[in-house]
Length: 394
Image (cartoon, rainbow, N blue to C red):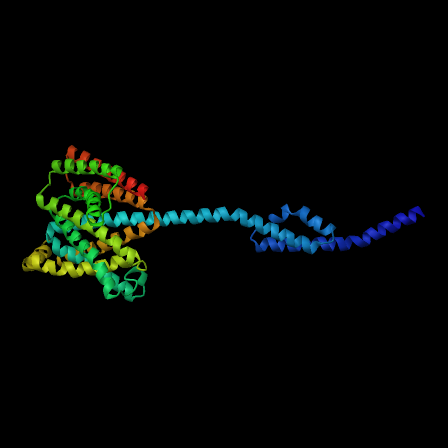
């Protein structure tokens, strides 16, 4: 009887074995399918035998498979999320770095091409007009081709156009003044004098808006003033026209900054890119008649002399190139500002001036005295300090 009972139990176990094996095979197949859908291959299945065995032996293989899938999804998402965020952050840094590199590169190209052009065509009023003419044509072309966000954005009303006109007119006059300086003295001297722009901005904010500047920020202006004075007095290319041009540029750009604050506060639905496009258009309206009045009588003779020196194709190509460089470097500056905080943008601006001064000295072979080098370094350091303190106060 014992032998018969033992034989019966063996037969019963053998009868249940196919059912158990079938359940296990189906669970394994479901596990492998889920793993393939998640892109894990068979590796994830090797870590789930206890879950599957527990589900099968409890007679709840369906529930077990759902739990396994849920746990697996949570684990996969948790492990993948930091990698996705890290990759996204790295891409953002690369894009921002690309805009900064383009800003620097195109700015250097503009300064060198602009100065080279002045050596053959010393007409800064006309060249200033060409800059904004090419920029306006570029904005109009992108607008009508459908890239409205990269140009004017949307039409503005007469009232809005009038609001933009005030800061844009200061931009136009400052642009002409800067080119008068570029044509008269070395690029390095113009950019050194232009580090005084925060001094003018602080004074104009107090006079026009009643906004007093804190004592630490005012103190940071001292090395800027002292550094510029030292650099100017030791510069071998110094002349009054170049110096006054840079100083008038500082004054008008300071006024532009003060007036732009009021405009940007009102025109909140107009992007900085669109605002700059309208500024370029208004600058053309202002620059063109002034250039004709000041340089019109001798313009034809000057252009003919430049063509004889450079060749017609080369001359017109330089005019177009310098206009595109001018517009694009300003556009990339706006793109950079949109992606970094004001402190970083201010530091980038200081580094930009250092690069421009350095490349211009090497390209044109300008000789800088030790006094000019030290003064320029002090002025740039003061500008960096001013930027840091200004943004900490905000």
